[in-house]
Length: 57
Length: 216
Image (cartoon, rainbow over all chains, first blue to last red; front, side):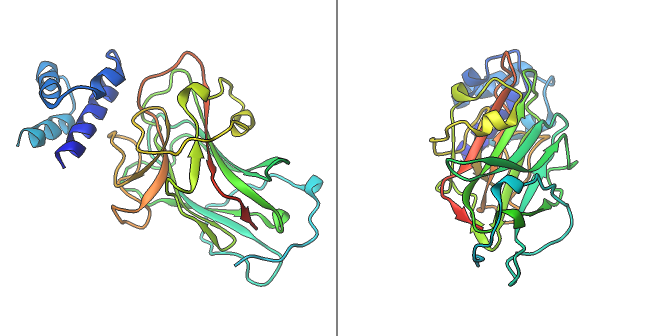
């Protein structure tokens, strides 16, 4: 389940951040992904923030 | 059920438009024949999608096409397409889905397809039953017929970017794609075009072809 959440989260991060390389985002680890979300802060979708919270649990 | 062959002139084939109404399987004793399938096209930047019938080594005809968003939510009911394929009774061939994706395409173009029934013969939307190609082999042209002619040898999987994919449950992107298969099962798989992964310099055609031949 964590893998599903992580892959969905990275996929949506890639969708919402076209300025960054999509494949590079898909290759991020859990820690890198959470750090990316934190860096985006509130400048991202509610769905992404919810997925990140689920991943932390 | 497969109908027996009738005299059908290949040269007299016409493109038959799909209707959106209800319909069941064909083959009820007459010479008429139907193709039915379900489609879900939710996404504000939905591109254009085409379905062809291909008599292998012979000709290819357009059966159905849709452009732009046809649904407004991932939870919308899948639509039923019904195509009259009476002109092709007796033929054996393959189905080909083509997406023509613009150079500046957005990710919100996850068009999904399932429940193909060719006059009573079901083509399940599983990875075993369909073949596609890589992004590098996608034709750089707006011609859907050219894209349909592209060789398809790759087994589709759960691709993450710009290709035909097989999936169950919801597509990974928000704001596009269905939340699950038409039959409401989270484990049933469907075909969809994965629109994520960024744009390319030119428009490209993406094709997925049924692996096996079907006889109408």
